[in-house]
Length: 59
Image (cartoon, rainbow, N blue to C red; front, side, top):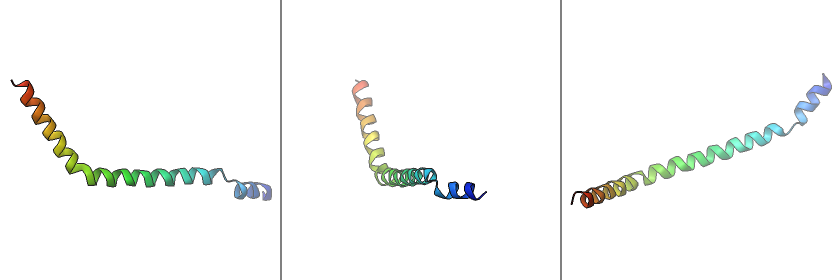
């Protein structure tokens, strides 16, 4: 039992998984913030593009 506890406490494989999860969470948060900040501008540009394309094909 002592050996099992010693092995569990000395195992660092879980730390790597936790670090990757933290990196993914930070990256995900940055993506959400970026999309939120740029969302209205992107929507406007897509609407403008749609309008121009419709004008070209309606001729």
